[in-house]
Structures are given as C-alpha cells and as structure tokens.
Amino acid sequence: MARYIDWILWWLKWPIAVFLLLSVPALIHSFEYFNFMTPKFYALAGGVVFYVLMIVLAGYNTCHTMQIISHELTHTFFAYLTFHNAGRIRLNPDGSGGSMVLKGRGNWVITLAPYFFPLFAFFYMLFMPMLLQICGGYWLVYGVFGFFVAYYWATVIEQVHPKQTDIIKEGYIFSIIVIVAANLYTSGIMLAFCSKSWEGVKIYLALVYRLSMNYATEILSLIVQNL
Image (cartoon, rainbow, N blue to C red; front, side):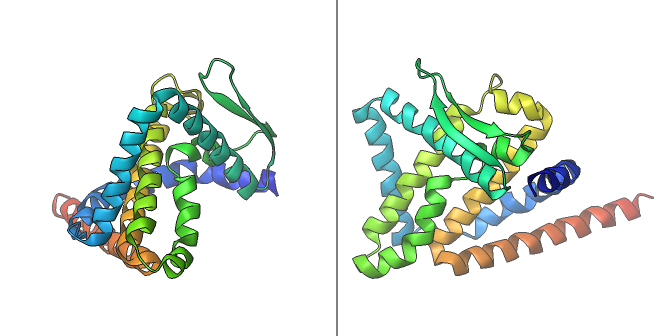
C-alpha cells in the first residue's frame, strides 16, 4: 500500500504544485472576506500574544526544543497516514534538530508536511466543539487556539531556511510553491474555523473554489483575446 501511495504522489507532485500556484491569487483575495473585529478573533489574538510572552519568559531554547518535537511528530503522522512504518524520533544532542526513523523511501508529503500542516492546532480543532460545550465560554478555548496557531507559525518561520535538508531534498522551487501556497490554505482554514467552526471551513473552501474559477476564467479570456 505504501509503495502504491508513493507512486501516486510522485506522479501528482508537479500537478499539485501547479494547482497550488494557480490558487494563490484566490487565496490572497479570500482574506478580504474575514471580519476580524469579533470577540472570537480578539480571543485568538490574545492567545498569540500569550505565546509571544511565553517565548520571552520561558526562553528560546525551551520553545525551540518543542518546535523540533512537533516537526518530527508531523513527519511521523503523515508517514502513518500514507501507510509507512515510522520508528522512533531522535533529537540531536546539540539541539540543532532531529530525525524520524522511516522504513522505506517515503514521499514528498511526509518530507514537507511540517512546513504546511499545523499538527497541534489541527487536533485541537477536532476537540474544540466539545471544549466549547464543557467550558460554556469561548474566550479561553479560542485563546488556546490562538496559542497553537502562533506556535505553528513560529515553528514554520524558524525551520524554513535555505539549508533545511527537507527543502533541499524536494528541491527549492517545488518546496517554495508548496510551502507558500499550502500555508495560505492552512491559514485561511484556521481563520475560517475560528469564525464559524467546521461550517466556516466548508464556506471558506467553497469561496476559494469560486474565486479560483473566476481568476481562471479571466486568464482564459485574456489568452483567447490575444490569440
């Protein structure tokens, strides 16, 4: 099964990259539809501020170690999703990074997943509806969500650089396209979830699809007119 999935992802690698690249204008445009002046987004912003303060108070090294752990856990999560046998996680003694033991060749999704998938925020999103019912209020629940959002973005900013071995492995051009475009999707989905939970995500993805079709139609019209 793992080999079959790897083969499919290998063939879809550049078609997906092209799709993501063509989606960028629609993704940027979609952010105009969010109303950030709401209590939920204020709570989200509070969680972001709290994370920044934690970095200042707890120290960079502690946060850096947690970022490495989440990075390797994301590799592991996508390894299991694509039916690969993943082993234990190793952290370098000098704190420079870590590794995940993977049996088999793997695929580009496993390699780049930590740079576009917010693992902790995603699992927290799964439990948020239940937490809202238990807590009865959203300030704390959405504040914690903001903490995980900030944690994810701090991890991406810290770990995306020219010497990153995962990026070198998949190639700079492909990696940049996937990381930038996929993170626009990721950010939009998290904001939509903050706005209207999973129904908001559904509405957001429909909006992106509609905007993408509009941009595609405009581009085709320009091409036809210039033939």
